[in-house]
Image 1: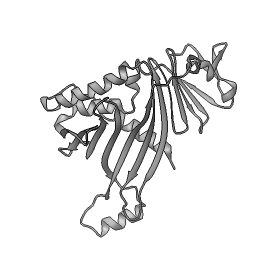
Image 2: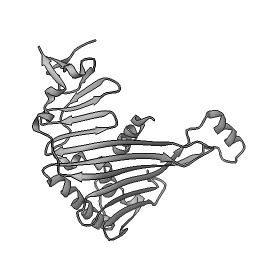
Image 3: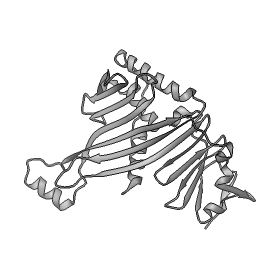
Length: 267
């Protein structure tokens, strides 16, 4: 199971949309609901929850994709610690550290965000769709049941990136239940199979395959770690200006991308 594919897909979705400053009255109520949701995460002193990434596709010529990745988040003001698959992340006031356990690599960078709410998975993507692309989607906001509200965006023209985008949330607490994307892209089939299909069809384009990525938010709890858990010295230390891994990660390579006041050790 290629769990990195889910992470890469999430990053691409988050970064491929160009932010454009615009809004319409059609999205005003939905935007207000989203701001209420964000405010909950932004204002909570600390919060923990689990996440589940599910990625899959329709079956096409006997081929389909299905992947799952579990994770957990703890956010506490400017500090955060979370795990996605086999990658551990930690942020404090001075550092953002990502530990790629499978690849034996530690990334050291500047802190990414200033509050826990901005750490939400794909928050930038949600903001972009809500505020910047109203003309590409048909918006709706409805109650699925007494406790669950749904914000839904359906493709309105061919320039829209997704066929359907939806957010489900708790109507009472305004906490997220799930975020889901449905889209289509050229099928990843053997070139011989694709050429045979195109030769026997009037179409000259590769077949499209429907895909879906769903992020579920589970087990909300008001837990936090001891402050010592957010110490960068759990991962790295400096000797004569050289950033080195701690004994726990002794055979890990460090990639240091902060402003160059310290230097990584060369192999």
